[in-house]
Length: 115
View 1 (cartoon, one colour):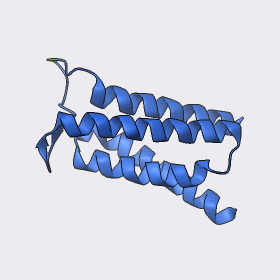
View 2 (cartoon, helix red, strand yellow):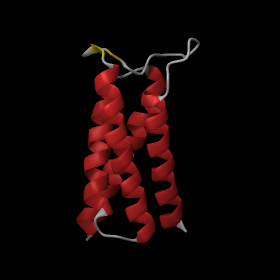
View 3 (cartoon, rainbow, N blue to C red):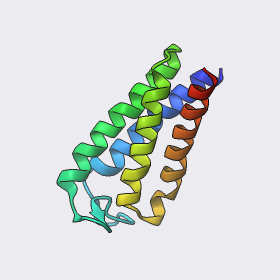
């Protein structure tokens, strides 16, 4: 049950990650996800990077659902990379995303340590 919940959560998180950075910017949006405090306006960098991260996070979720051992190294890499990506494009609206990505990396690390 927990494995199913975790796998589905990772896939949903991947889809939300994709939607935040790839969807067209609405005029009433609370922030511009392609506007980075570090690299400025960089939609042409943010969108492809978010697609790669979403694929990695979704693949981690599929690995969890299937009980595959490769989910943990992929989850560690994608969690750390996604957290760093969100920090580069930080907005207070994305605070929960940082926490979720760190939790993914920590969970993967704990799984690797116990294996």
